[in-house]
Amino acid sequence: MSTLVPVLLSGGSGTRLWPLSREMHPKQFQPLVGEKSLLQATWERLQGLPGMAAPIVVANEEHRFMVAEQLRQLGASASAIVLEPVGRNTAPAIAVAALQAMAGGEDPLLLVLPSDHVIADPAGFRAAVQEARRGAAEEGSLVTFGIVPTAAETGYGYIKAGGDVGPEGPPTGGVRAVERFVEKPDLATAEAYVASGDYFWNSGMFLFRASRYLAELETHAPAILAGAKAALAGAVRDVDFLRLDRAAFEACPSDSIDYAVMEKTTAAAVLPINVGWNDVGSWSALWEIADQDPDGNAHHGDVLALGCRNTLAWGGRRLVSLLGLKDVIVVDTDDALLVAARDQVQQVKDIVARLKAEGRPQASIHRKVYRPWGSYDGIDSGERFQVKRIVVKPGAALSLQMHHHRAEHWIVVQGTARITCEDKVFMLSENQSTYIPLGSKHRLENPGKVPVELIEVQSGSYLGEDDIVRFEDVYGRGAR
Image 1 (cartoon, rainbow, N blue to C red):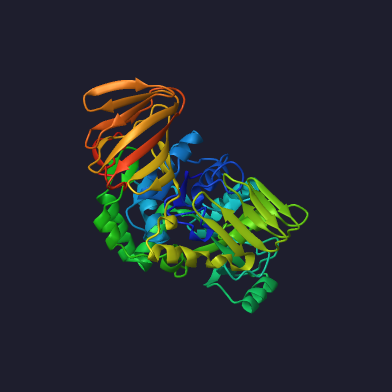
Image 2: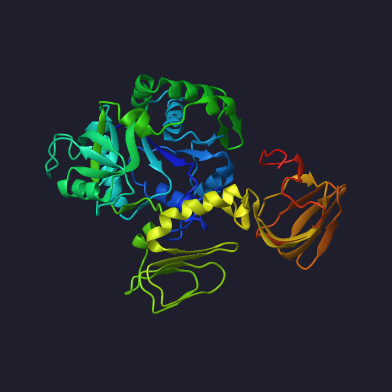
């Protein structure tokens, strides 16, 4: 049996789940269902598959430390975390992963999975992978997993399966030849698709041999293959990451695997599955899979609802109260509040587009920002001052840095910090403080076993995050 290499695609931004999901901390890193993030749940559901190797993760460069940290929390390590300098859709991302998987001389099967989906029946999914693996994928088919539709959904593309779709199936089991891929239909067409029994939702999950995908790409989209090869040939190792060559990857055509390969190849196959799949593509989709009370209300956090039906309320640090509402979505974060009719939540992306057009930070970052060493939370700000709550993980350190335009006061509220300020190195414990003058080289470290928490008060003429000059950094970061 061939080695199985999971390829976890983690480059999405999840704008339809704003304000919880944002460009710098999108939905795949959020614990939307259960205690694990969607990325972590994607990896965990694969455990138990025979012959499985370490995953290849293809991620946005800005998310690299979150990917590494979330895998570390599971005790997992990727064979490669490939960083895309720009987004080029799924066909180039999978091409790079296939080339990387074959770099050691093997030709494994690739199990390509978006990292932001929910599957309620992991055991059933693993069984489906094994079914697709035996015969079809091993023998050269490009298998996609089609979801047995539960409703006439207009938000998904569909796959029409060829041949008999009865329970017995052909010799390869339930794997069918693909007759055609179809775009998102209108409601009447979707109803006809579901009634026919021949159409399945396009899940975006695939299983095929690495060399087989590359051969099809060479035939149908050779410019994408050439761009992927050039980007990987110029890649640079950076700590735990593989940075693709920016110029080469930017020059690579942008296209999905469906358009570039699956709709053109004669080797496409589909395995219909019913495993409780959901792409969590909107707040209404999350409401559908969330635990609901007898009135259809699904709540997260400190939520009080009276006389409400079919609502989803996602609370943050404060109490969220709902009174007499029906079919409403309420999402409360530290710096943004969304209130929407449940049948209008697909338009949340329009709010994000408006925020981007206005240059507002809520489009891309949360008030709490994650860094490889920990996090900071912007508590308050005003003219010439800013207050942050900083948390530094045990054993972690900020870069040796200086600022041209601001001074800083640090007050330790938990743990013990090692402080460098110019030529002085000293320790600060709880309730102690220090002053970092403007223009001074400084560093904050946590030498202990518990997180260091401190309050930072910045003052100066400019308080932007780009006013950082780094002299040393254990994480390989540049000026910021």
